[in-house]
Length: 113
Image (cartoon, rainbow, N blue to C red; front, side, top):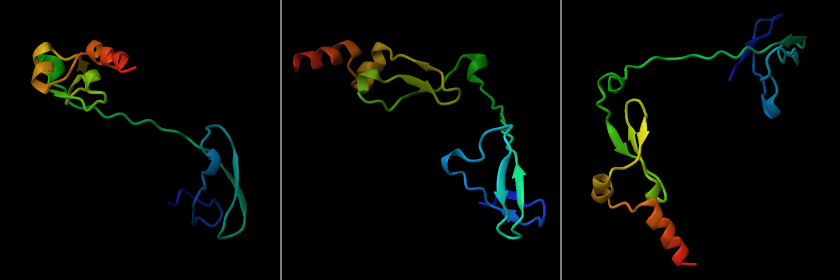
């Protein structure tokens, strides 16, 4: 991956980030251009991008809950596929998905010891 351009010859130069080299902000990192052989310094700027998405479930309360894929299954939750809000399973959902309670799961572990 070509990361920067040499300030002398303007050719693309790859930064080897082994051991975290080049990731700290406000640090002058020294490099030698493999094309022209001149030394230069570079600094790193970290930019955060945010994206907004509609979450109608947060406005009308109609979440699209799906069962999480959790192991052990007794610790499963229901997670909204839109906003990722989580809640515990109702008793009807436990029966529907054949999931035991955390207490019965823990008790079964204690009995097997």
